[in-house]
Amino acid sequence: MLIIGERINASRESIAKAISERNAAFIRNEAEIQAGAGAGYIDVNAGTFVGEEAEHLQWVIETVQEAIDLPLCIDSPDPAVIKAMMPLVKKIPMINSITLETSRLESILPIVAEHQAKVIGLCQSGDAIADTAEAKVKMAGQLVEKVEGSGILLDRLYIDPLVYPLATNDQSALATLNAIEKIMKEFPGVHTTCGLTNVSYGLPNRKLVNRTFLVSAIGRGLDSVIMDPTDKQLFGALKAALTISGKDEFCMQYISGFREGKIE
Image (cartoon, rainbow, N blue to C red; front, side, top):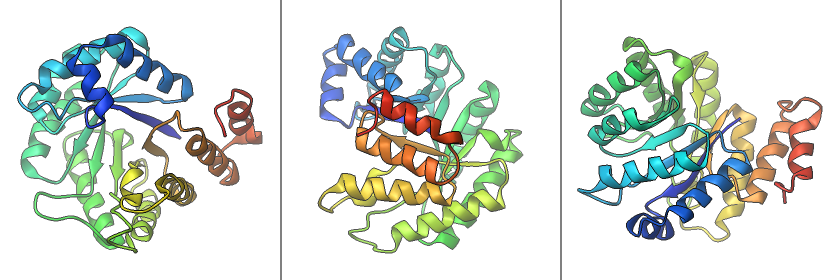
Protein backbone atom coordinates (compact mmCIF):
# COMPACT_ATOMS: atom_id res chain seq x y z
CA MET A 1 0.00 0.00 0.00
CA LEU A 2 1.63 3.21 -1.17
CA ILE A 3 1.21 6.13 1.24
CA ILE A 4 1.59 9.65 -0.14
CA GLY A 5 2.23 12.00 2.78
CA GLU A 6 -0.05 15.02 2.50
CA ARG A 7 1.15 17.34 5.26
CA ILE A 8 3.41 19.74 3.29
CA ASN A 9 0.60 21.63 1.61
CA ALA A 10 0.37 25.41 1.65
CA SER A 11 -3.38 25.21 2.20
CA ARG A 12 -2.44 24.41 5.81
CA GLU A 13 -1.89 27.67 7.65
CA SER A 14 1.20 26.43 9.50
CA ILE A 15 2.84 25.29 6.26
CA ALA A 16 2.08 28.55 4.45
CA LYS A 17 3.58 30.48 7.35
CA ALA A 18 6.71 28.32 7.36
CA ILE A 19 7.15 28.78 3.61
CA SER A 20 6.66 32.55 3.81
CA GLU A 21 9.18 32.83 6.63
CA ARG A 22 11.58 30.32 5.05
CA ASN A 23 11.44 28.24 8.22
CA ALA A 24 13.49 25.34 6.92
CA ALA A 25 13.56 23.51 10.25
CA PHE A 26 9.76 23.34 10.32
CA ILE A 27 9.49 22.00 6.76
CA ARG A 28 12.32 19.50 7.30
CA ASN A 29 10.56 18.22 10.42
CA GLU A 30 7.29 17.78 8.49
CA ALA A 31 9.15 15.72 5.90
CA GLU A 32 11.03 13.66 8.48
CA ILE A 33 8.02 12.73 10.59
CA GLN A 34 6.08 11.58 7.52
CA ALA A 35 9.00 9.54 6.27
CA GLY A 36 9.42 7.99 9.70
CA ALA A 37 5.73 7.17 9.87
CA GLY A 38 5.77 5.16 6.66
CA ALA A 39 5.17 7.49 3.71
CA GLY A 40 6.51 6.30 0.36
CA TYR A 41 6.17 9.70 -1.34
CA ILE A 42 6.01 13.20 0.12
CA ASP A 43 3.53 15.54 -1.52
CA VAL A 44 4.82 19.11 -1.86
CA ASN A 45 2.45 21.97 -2.63
CA ALA A 46 2.79 25.77 -2.64
CA GLY A 47 -0.30 26.44 -4.71
CA THR A 48 -1.77 29.15 -2.50
CA PHE A 49 1.07 31.51 -3.44
CA VAL A 50 -0.49 32.69 -6.68
CA GLY A 51 2.08 34.37 -8.91
CA GLU A 52 4.94 33.25 -6.67
CA GLU A 53 4.29 29.52 -6.60
CA ALA A 54 7.37 28.40 -8.54
CA GLU A 55 9.78 30.30 -6.32
CA HIS A 56 8.20 28.95 -3.12
CA LEU A 57 7.83 25.39 -4.38
CA GLN A 58 11.47 25.29 -5.46
CA TRP A 59 12.50 26.24 -1.93
CA VAL A 60 10.20 23.59 -0.45
CA ILE A 61 11.58 20.89 -2.74
CA GLU A 62 15.18 21.77 -1.95
CA THR A 63 14.45 21.89 1.77
CA VAL A 64 12.61 18.56 1.83
CA GLN A 65 15.31 16.83 -0.19
CA GLU A 66 17.92 18.01 2.28
CA ALA A 67 16.03 16.19 5.03
CA ILE A 68 14.88 12.89 3.51
CA ASP A 69 15.68 10.45 0.73
CA LEU A 70 12.12 9.75 -0.44
CA PRO A 71 10.71 10.66 -3.86
CA LEU A 72 8.35 13.61 -4.07
CA CYS A 73 4.84 14.09 -5.37
CA ILE A 74 4.87 17.42 -7.22
CA ASP A 75 1.48 18.98 -6.56
CA SER A 76 0.50 22.08 -8.51
CA PRO A 77 -2.47 23.44 -10.46
CA ASP A 78 -0.03 24.98 -12.97
CA PRO A 79 1.60 22.68 -15.56
CA ALA A 80 4.34 25.27 -16.15
CA VAL A 81 5.31 25.10 -12.48
CA ILE A 82 5.41 21.30 -12.59
CA LYS A 83 7.68 21.41 -15.64
CA ALA A 84 9.99 23.92 -13.96
CA MET A 85 10.35 21.71 -10.88
CA MET A 86 11.36 18.52 -12.70
CA PRO A 87 15.11 19.33 -13.02
CA LEU A 88 15.24 19.89 -9.25
CA VAL A 89 14.06 16.47 -8.09
CA LYS A 90 16.65 13.86 -7.14
CA LYS A 91 14.39 10.83 -7.57
CA ILE A 92 11.73 10.02 -10.14
CA PRO A 93 8.64 11.85 -8.85
CA MET A 94 4.91 11.48 -8.95
CA ILE A 95 2.89 14.31 -10.50
CA ASN A 96 -0.35 15.47 -8.92
CA SER A 97 -2.32 15.56 -11.18
CA ILE A 98 -3.98 15.20 -14.57
CA THR A 99 -7.67 15.44 -15.42
CA LEU A 100 -9.46 14.90 -18.73
CA GLU A 101 -9.18 18.61 -19.44
CA THR A 102 -7.44 18.77 -22.83
CA SER A 103 -5.04 21.60 -22.03
CA ARG A 104 -3.86 19.89 -18.84
CA LEU A 105 -3.39 16.54 -20.54
CA GLU A 106 -1.43 18.10 -23.39
CA SER A 107 0.77 20.00 -20.96
CA ILE A 108 1.47 17.31 -18.37
CA LEU A 109 1.52 13.95 -20.17
CA PRO A 110 4.69 14.86 -22.14
CA ILE A 111 6.39 15.71 -18.82
CA VAL A 112 5.30 12.37 -17.36
CA ALA A 113 6.57 10.50 -20.41
CA GLU A 114 9.89 12.34 -20.59
CA HIS A 115 10.74 11.80 -16.93
CA GLN A 116 9.12 8.36 -16.56
CA ALA A 117 7.19 9.78 -13.62
CA LYS A 118 4.15 8.38 -11.89
CA VAL A 119 0.99 10.42 -12.25
CA ILE A 120 -2.29 10.81 -10.40
CA GLY A 121 -5.30 10.93 -12.71
CA LEU A 122 -8.51 12.52 -11.42
CA CYS A 123 -11.89 11.33 -12.70
CA GLN A 124 -12.83 14.83 -13.74
CA SER A 125 -13.05 16.77 -16.98
CA GLY A 126 -13.01 20.47 -17.66
CA ASP A 127 -16.80 20.78 -17.50
CA ALA A 128 -18.01 17.71 -15.61
CA ILE A 129 -17.53 15.71 -12.45
CA ALA A 130 -18.28 12.03 -12.00
CA ASP A 131 -20.67 11.41 -9.13
CA THR A 132 -21.76 7.85 -9.95
CA ALA A 133 -19.68 4.69 -10.13
CA GLU A 134 -20.49 4.34 -13.83
CA ALA A 135 -19.34 7.87 -14.61
CA LYS A 136 -16.16 7.43 -12.59
CA VAL A 137 -15.26 4.18 -14.37
CA LYS A 138 -16.00 5.76 -17.76
CA MET A 139 -13.64 8.65 -17.00
CA ALA A 140 -11.05 6.21 -15.67
CA GLY A 141 -11.18 4.40 -19.01
CA GLN A 142 -10.65 7.67 -20.84
CA LEU A 143 -7.64 8.45 -18.63
CA VAL A 144 -6.21 5.00 -19.35
CA GLU A 145 -6.64 5.60 -23.09
CA LYS A 146 -4.90 8.98 -22.94
CA VAL A 147 -2.02 7.70 -20.81
CA GLU A 148 -1.41 4.61 -22.95
CA GLY A 149 -1.63 6.77 -26.06
CA SER A 150 1.25 8.85 -24.72
CA GLY A 151 3.45 5.78 -24.34
CA ILE A 152 3.20 5.75 -20.55
CA LEU A 153 3.00 2.40 -18.79
CA LEU A 154 -0.23 1.84 -16.87
CA ASP A 155 1.58 0.89 -13.68
CA ARG A 156 2.62 4.55 -13.45
CA LEU A 157 -1.00 5.75 -13.43
CA TYR A 158 -2.81 6.22 -10.09
CA ILE A 159 -6.51 6.89 -10.70
CA ASP A 160 -8.37 8.89 -8.08
CA PRO A 161 -12.14 8.36 -8.59
CA LEU A 162 -12.77 11.42 -6.37
CA VAL A 163 -15.04 11.01 -3.38
CA TYR A 164 -17.36 13.94 -2.63
CA PRO A 165 -18.69 15.02 0.78
CA LEU A 166 -21.25 12.67 2.26
CA ALA A 167 -22.88 15.69 3.88
CA THR A 168 -24.12 16.80 0.46
CA ASN A 169 -24.31 13.41 -1.33
CA ASP A 170 -24.95 10.42 0.91
CA GLN A 171 -24.18 8.00 -1.97
CA SER A 172 -20.79 9.48 -2.81
CA ALA A 173 -18.68 7.09 -0.75
CA LEU A 174 -20.50 4.04 -2.06
CA ALA A 175 -20.13 5.25 -5.65
CA THR A 176 -16.40 5.72 -5.13
CA LEU A 177 -15.98 2.31 -3.49
CA ASN A 178 -17.80 0.62 -6.36
CA ALA A 179 -15.68 2.54 -8.85
CA ILE A 180 -12.42 1.50 -7.16
CA GLU A 181 -13.41 -2.14 -7.39
CA LYS A 182 -14.40 -1.91 -11.05
CA ILE A 183 -11.33 0.11 -12.05
CA MET A 184 -8.96 -2.40 -10.47
CA LYS A 185 -10.71 -5.25 -12.29
CA GLU A 186 -11.23 -3.63 -15.69
CA PHE A 187 -7.82 -2.00 -16.15
CA PRO A 188 -5.09 -4.48 -15.14
CA GLY A 189 -1.87 -2.78 -14.10
CA VAL A 190 -3.43 0.52 -13.13
CA HIS A 191 -3.42 1.72 -9.52
CA THR A 192 -6.06 3.59 -7.53
CA THR A 193 -5.51 6.29 -4.96
CA CYS A 194 -7.69 8.62 -2.94
CA GLY A 195 -7.56 11.73 -0.80
CA LEU A 196 -9.67 10.92 2.24
CA THR A 197 -10.66 14.25 3.71
CA ASN A 198 -13.39 15.20 1.21
CA VAL A 199 -15.62 12.32 2.28
CA SER A 200 -16.11 13.71 5.79
CA TYR A 201 -16.39 17.43 5.01
CA GLY A 202 -19.23 19.00 6.96
CA LEU A 203 -19.64 16.07 9.36
CA PRO A 204 -18.73 15.77 13.05
CA ASN A 205 -15.85 13.51 14.11
CA ARG A 206 -14.38 13.63 10.62
CA LYS A 207 -11.42 11.39 11.41
CA LEU A 208 -13.74 8.50 12.24
CA VAL A 209 -15.45 8.82 8.86
CA ASN A 210 -12.08 9.05 7.09
CA ARG A 211 -10.81 5.89 8.79
CA THR A 212 -13.95 3.94 8.03
CA PHE A 213 -13.89 4.98 4.38
CA LEU A 214 -10.23 4.00 4.05
CA VAL A 215 -10.85 0.54 5.50
CA SER A 216 -13.77 0.03 3.10
CA ALA A 217 -11.71 1.23 0.13
CA ILE A 218 -8.84 -1.13 0.90
CA GLY A 219 -11.37 -3.97 0.91
CA ARG A 220 -12.35 -2.95 -2.64
CA GLY A 221 -8.75 -2.96 -3.89
CA LEU A 222 -7.42 0.55 -3.22
CA ASP A 223 -3.62 0.27 -3.31
CA SER A 224 -2.52 3.86 -2.63
CA VAL A 225 -3.73 6.68 -0.42
CA ILE A 226 -3.00 10.37 0.09
CA MET A 227 -3.04 10.81 3.87
CA ASP A 228 -1.32 11.97 7.02
CA PRO A 229 0.78 8.95 8.02
CA THR A 230 1.48 10.48 11.44
CA ASP A 231 -2.18 10.01 12.41
CA LYS A 232 -1.73 6.81 14.43
CA GLN A 233 -5.40 5.87 14.44
CA LEU A 234 -5.65 6.29 10.68
CA PHE A 235 -2.38 4.44 10.11
CA GLY A 236 -3.56 1.66 12.41
CA ALA A 237 -6.84 1.33 10.51
CA LEU A 238 -4.86 1.05 7.27
CA LYS A 239 -2.58 -1.69 8.61
CA ALA A 240 -5.49 -3.59 10.17
CA ALA A 241 -7.43 -3.41 6.89
CA LEU A 242 -4.46 -4.77 4.93
CA THR A 243 -4.15 -7.60 7.43
CA ILE A 244 -7.85 -8.48 7.26
CA SER A 245 -7.76 -8.30 3.44
CA GLY A 246 -4.97 -10.90 3.29
CA LYS A 247 -2.41 -8.37 2.06
CA ASP A 248 -0.09 -8.58 5.08
CA GLU A 249 1.76 -11.90 5.17
CA PHE A 250 1.77 -13.36 8.68
CA CYS A 251 0.44 -9.94 9.88
CA MET A 252 4.03 -8.68 9.98
CA GLN A 253 3.27 -5.11 8.86
CA TYR A 254 0.60 -4.77 11.53
CA ILE A 255 2.80 -6.27 14.24
CA SER A 256 5.79 -4.14 13.23
CA GLY A 257 3.70 -0.97 13.19
CA PHE A 258 2.41 -1.73 16.68
CA ARG A 259 5.86 -2.49 18.05
CA GLU A 260 7.24 0.72 16.55
CA GLY A 261 4.51 2.80 18.19
CA LYS A 262 2.95 3.84 14.88
CA ILE A 263 -0.47 2.35 15.67
CA GLU A 264 -2.90 3.69 18.24
